[in-house]
Image (cartoon, rainbow, N blue to C red; front, side, top):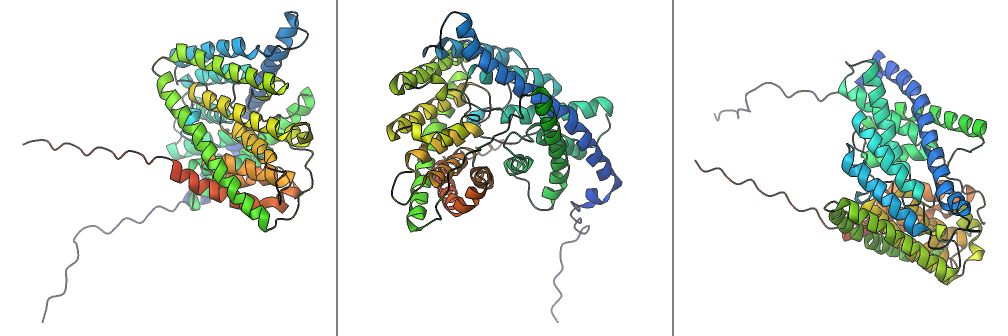
Length: 450
């Protein structure tokens, strides 16, 4: 009789840890309380950061030229302004710990919270970039500052916090910092969760304290905005033209817009990565030169179209709603020039400065969609929404966030055009992945001779 097969001898396989065990424990309740408490000061700091950036933008672009005797800001003004910004950003990256934080040319990737020593350099590089009009947004610095401040605060109060609990509280700090930036705490939560690639049961574990901190942060933003009269610095699109129900032609244009956004995204991202590699070798000289080039692009746009150079500068967050509401003021040619100049300034800014990539991608996509909005089978709102979603996913590689950003901000009309946005986002996402070079395989270790 044949012998029975013998299995491997050894200890039984360890049972995988239950990700929801923490939720059932009393410690999780304590974490929720801490997340809510952390949301209060961090959201206040984030509000102050955004208020400072807004005041600097007004001071440097409008008040300073008027103080020097100009009746209106000259078209060439961005050139020396952005050169000075390049000097300040390069100095903060070179001289302070943390290298100024997140490199925007590499996309939006949620990493671990920075150390307390890194926070001053991150804040200074972001304020110098954004305050002078670099084509980047505040979301990446706020995510880093929120997470870093949360971890620093908890470690100051209690040093024996477990690493997983510290990571949850750091994420909650990031949630609170961007709670209203995208128009809703829910949009900020989706952005962070998709960027961190958290899924399964762990999504709920991380999401609940983050949402709680974001909700508290939204209340603080609203209260401070009302008390100071400055508003909440939230992305708002107030006047949305009526959308036409999707038809066969609309779905065809969704494919075209998705493909065009993927190609434009590659044309923005690849030069930015090449520029980043060069700038890191000669930080000060090339950052200043890049600032000058961004200013020249803004000057060319102003002289070509007769509009303000500020249309190319800045993240586009506050200009996105007026662009849609005032689209009749732009000819198709002017919109094409705006897309080209904004995209070029965006690529240069990604490669040398510090900030976030979200809002410029939305603006470039929205302007491109408006340029195509008068084609047969298209309407203004559909073109705008498809352009925003397709360009956002081309630059961020976050498809769910791209769909939500392009639709929820448009209210009822966004629900109408959502099927078109989904098609445009999927086409752009798949093609963008195909256009992204595969990472080089790691070299095989050389065998050690015996």
